[in-house]
Image 1 (cartoon, helix red, strand yellow):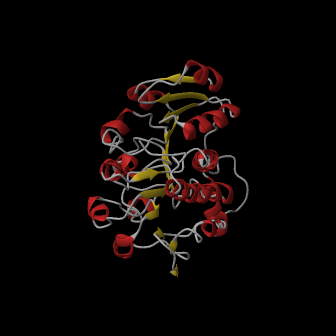
Image 2 (cartoon, rainbow, N blue to C red; image 1 turned 90 degrees about the vertical axis):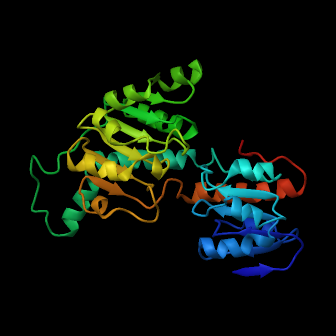
Length: 323
């Protein structure tokens, strides 16, 4: 950790991409965990005298953290989801909370489609087979998968990421349906060839289903055994939203009893812990929260979290204040 002595303290809890941090050094005393994300214990100690923090989504900013940081004025979260922060309590203390939406929509949508293709075409299985020396030549029935073309894609949570997925899926000539808390404008539905359905319809009609919804009381464990029982047995599920939307013990049961065909997870219920039963199944594709992991997206996110700190310091309203 590098400490530069200047004025109010800004705590940056993990590495950022690019040189955006340099814009802070003339205004603040910067404590920067440049090489790795702080653990919760180190964070809880370092935050006590901070005026502003750039938080990684793996760190919890709960009431205890907020109460222990009397000088705190801004929490700038590197990511879209803010379920790691007690937002309402922070706001009640006059603390501005910001996030970084929109700039990661394309990268996360591409990741969703990548996981969809990798799982439906059994690409990971094929990679493992070749590397293990199990490939003995072309066979007509070797690792048969499923085409995307003409199939029905369901999207749970059709914000900017979901809409980007819908646009890409249109190029595969997929039929796209979505389930949202509120219906999208007619213009958006028409442009993206989207059909609105309720949650039951999403489960029952989707050949492929992508979760992009944020985590809240309504979405927590939304995918439980009852939900899996309503899905097609040929369905493939992809989660690039938040891990606890899926009740993993029920997902494992659904896979073991063939209620669904396969799953791809970029997020987990209790990260970084991943159930062993998921690691050992060939019809499960796992990635370590790579949704926005492109140089372009992470650079834009890094710029936004620093912009938010400077905006609050200079009396401006940041672009992305969490409401």
